[in-house]
Structure formats: structure tokens, C-alpha cells
Length: 283
Image (cartoon, rainbow, N blue to C red; front, side):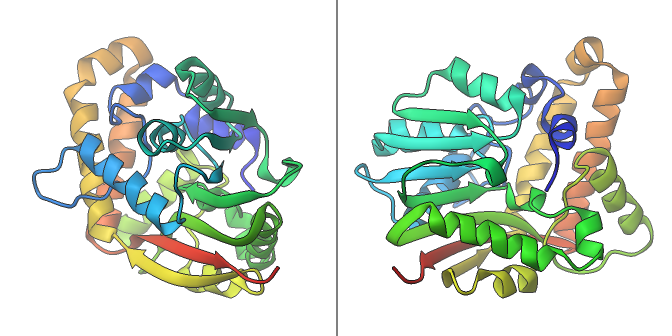
């Protein structure tokens, strides 16, 4: 699992920095473009709605969001769907402070490692959007420990939910092995922007679900993430002067390189994006 220092590298630059190039809700995960005319804002709402349906959530559901970011999904669930019992957990202090600032109605948030989370109750549904990449480290994966770590994650989610619950999971997945310049750029992103994180292989996720969760639906959206990261890059570059002035040249240049690498990785098929609708097994 990425530690708090790793998470601070990935999400602790400055909330105002991320606000300059993410959508207005500050969703830092793949959007769903239903039309060529969708704005990034609309596409992010599409994503939240797609995952809400995957988790079978309605206004009466109690929902746990594992790795809730800056609160975009919590905000959507409570304000747009009418959910009155939503809980988010994050390991990022910056994200936690932003959620408190947003004062999202009917939502609670804890700054806690998911391995230490003890809700004291069970939820109707669970969601996790872009957090699963942090569950196992590159070192743990190389040692072959990642499957057991993933199984422990899914076991915990099972324990936190009621019989009949659904789990909407969205994660980047490794697809095709990069070589040459692509390997160098993707490796740089992993070590410099997301230390402690790694994109899981699809087969590793599938091997880890039993005996707790059954895959009912699986959707991949490689082209959607290429478009999402391309829009982030465009917005970043549109704010180049301000970012260089406020946050320094190195921050702008690192994030320009990182987002450019992401566009390349998704366009060329080295990485993809998977969305799962998982149904809880057993009582």
C-alpha cells in the first residue's frame, strides 16, 4: 500500500494547483464521454452516474467511498442522487481538508488508511474510483505478494457491506508491456508522480475477487482516459504562466511530462481503464 508520504507526493502539491486543470468538481479519474460534444465537467458527471448505477445506489442507500479524492463522487451522490448517508475515506490530508471545506451535505469523511478503517457498521454499497492502483506497491508486486494484498482488500470491502451489496470499482489496468521510450516515460510517472502505486493487471484483479465478490459487469474505457488526460493537459498548458509563477517551473514541467505520458500510454494501448460492477457473495 502507498504510504502517507507517497500519497502526499501524488496529491499534496496544492489543492489550488489541481483546481486549475481538473474539472470543476476536482475529479482526478477517467471521465465517460457519451458524446463528442461532452465537456470534461459533463463527462465526469457521466462517470459518477455510470458507477452509481453499477453499485445499484439510490437515495436510501448507505455508501462507502474508498479513496474518495477531493470529494467529487460524494458530492455527486448527495447533491444529485439524494443519498443521505455517504462516507468517504482518504489517506491524503490535503484531500481531507478540501472535503471539509466543501461541506458536502449528508457526507462524512475520515483521513485514514483503509487497512485501519473500522466503520462499526455495514453499508449497502461500496465504491472505489482510482484508488486500487495504490493497494499494492511495485516492490510488493515484483515479489509476487500483490494477489494476497488484493484479496485482503476485497475481504475488507466484503466485511464492510451487507448481504446483497454491490461494489463499483474503477481502476487503471496494465495492458500491453511498454518498450523503449514508452517504458522510460511510464516508469518515470510511476516513480516521480505516483510513488508506491502500480497499475494492476486485469487477471490479478480477477484472481483476487473470490470468494467475496462476483463480476457482473466489466467495461473498459482506454479511449476515454486518453481523452480525459488530453483535456487535463490542455487545461494545464492553458494555465502555464500562472502555474510557473505560483508553483514553480519544475511543477509545470513535471506535470506536462506526466500528462503527456498518460495520453501516450492510453492512446497506444499500454494502459487501459476498467470499471467493474461486483456483487457480494454469501451472507
